[in-house]
Image (cartoon, rainbow over all chains, first blue to last red; front, side):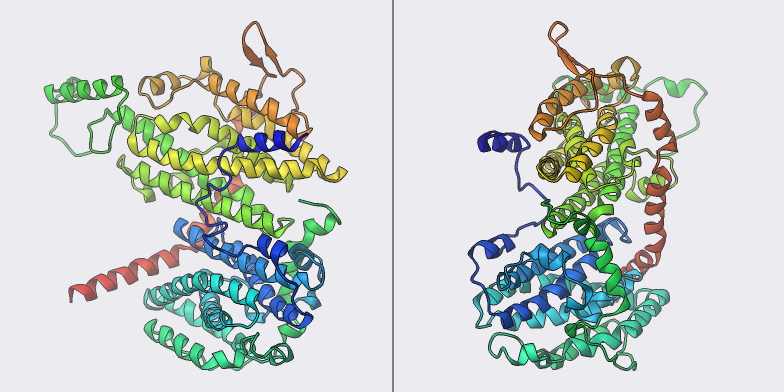
Length: 286
Length: 328
């Protein structure tokens, strides 16, 4: 079949972009653009982009599970939107990283082994009940918001451009998590108890987010040093928890090293589900 | 309905002068092919028919999220995952517009949701088939959304304003969904042998159920005529089915696949498409609740509702506290 015929056949279905959902928002830097126009980063920058991409990919995979299971329809839409944004960030970071190694976003997402992933433990944690998901979102979205705000000034133009888009979206994610934390913290005794429980089980994975690794230290001016975000993060989350009538728990900090490929038991299952179909059909296009 | 003074048996059947006037105004509106709006007087059977139709449509959007959500976490590329997430999320949005439209007819969303969860309300029976393979994401988009569009485009002109307006937006998004489904099948049809086989298998399974989405043949569809007289429905079940089958008979050629219907052909004399006999016994059985996935679909809705109860209660309690502190 000729291209024109195929285009005509596809056009018969109407507007290709008529989705209520922001698949490719406004002036977004799309992964497709990075793949075509992007300049390959150094191996070091690619390693850094990979860490950011892996966090977003695993978090999006987790959040996507809520679609069709949320407490109310509005939350199916909201969590779906957030997952979609975060998946978009993952795709941009992974596409950019892949340029250094001649790999696509899908090569990196579907064909790496568990120990090659660099995600943080906090994003691998199970969804639990809605309160656990909201608390995980609160912890991560405040972190990502601070991170992308700084990454906008990175000397690496592509990372800066991805961050410029992501920061606006993560600002909304942060707001969503803050509103729900306050609502649930102040709602009923049951909801407050569930939020305290969520804090207890997630708090041990906070320190890992702020640990500077060699990859950060070698990329001065390009990467954001996670340790520099700690104070602002602590101040912001304390204020939200106070508004919600909650407190930072006294739990200790787990000795975890996701950035070095040492993962929670959960990641294996996340990857098994995510990769199963692609791996059944090596070399296939979809 | 507001309680009224007790009347002599039989007398309530006789319309009052006001009712006759209202009925005449309504009839004139329908004759002019104008829109009925929520504040307009409407006959009870019209309200009831629409409430049933709009809410069933909303329920179908919500239940219809499940077969597709089943593949979000396993989508074979990140781009496909992103498109599928957007699509399922659109469906939640469609459910929301439609519940809003149904609420303008006087039944609350909570009540409509309760009808769904208790099995008193129906939804499109096609969602009671399991989505077994990735190719089902293509077949559902192409055939199921395609049939839905064929049904829904005329509904954009439905006499009830809020329904018609909701449909305009929904149809636009549905055509995006159908295109995405077709693209999934197109990629598979150009792929490996295993991918082609997967695509053909999905088409085989969804062909007949998608033709049955238009409802029983005209001579066995007792409510259709009244709906057409009220300008809710514009074409009969068989007319819409004809239009759809003609469309997919052409499109399947682009895929290089076949429809599982050796009898399918265009009869030049009768000027219509002839397709195989559809299994209406199976259709009725699925409607009764005996489809492969009826139990699973409803239970997922009930579970989400149950598990989310504490969240909704907390949100309500918080809103009440806020309102109180504003007063104080």
